Image (tube, rainbow, N blue to C red):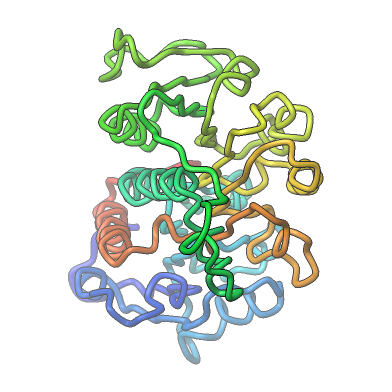
Length: 342
């Protein structure tokens, strides 16, 4: 897209309510660059609804040149019905496995993402789960809500654990989020094990040579860790890779945490493992399907804590991602696109 002095590119935020659900996000930076249209829905799964929004929401005779999405699947067939005016798709997040990268490239449409906007938020979500598990916080509250005050009046009945000296294992945890988890974990006195395809930390990694940070093969990491946190991307190799066989390698006292992508864990096999008390618990900020089907067993499986993908949803993180989307769009308008993934 050439630089323009007089007209602003029409920009459609396809599912604006997912990012700005409380109307507290300042979009002024984006509005200075673009004519912004906010389609105020959280998610659309119906192909016809998506196609209709892209082609008609901005008004008669107005077709978007830029489409912003957040964690919404755009299939090849849906993308093929986007108007020819679309020149840029911005994923307001890091993962882009929900977008038709190859098809966009063949059509000359750039796709960009935001690689580093939620590092602290997601890392702190991992720590939040770990702290909750260590003190049986959720089971204590469940007992109170059920009218059971026996932990206040009689012998305490739930397990409590100190974190110091325990091991947190990070699957694919040598990137930015994993490194932030490592920083906080070390400050809390934990040891850290990391698995990666390369089997070593990247050159210049801040914890290279730290005696409390070890690289381990995945199976060894699963066997030795008290907490296992998933940080790898979702792709053909990792989809369903944390299955029943892998979970059964974990300690019966261990906890599994996923803030990456839901489909990395085989949810059906996790549920079966939880029914058999194979591990002590799981914390899932992401699920295989978001939201899970209304009749999914995962809603009611004991010792699984679910949160609705909130690691990135703090107001600071959401503001940051939209400011960074504006940076991407400005670079694209100026003919110097950044963070292009196709």
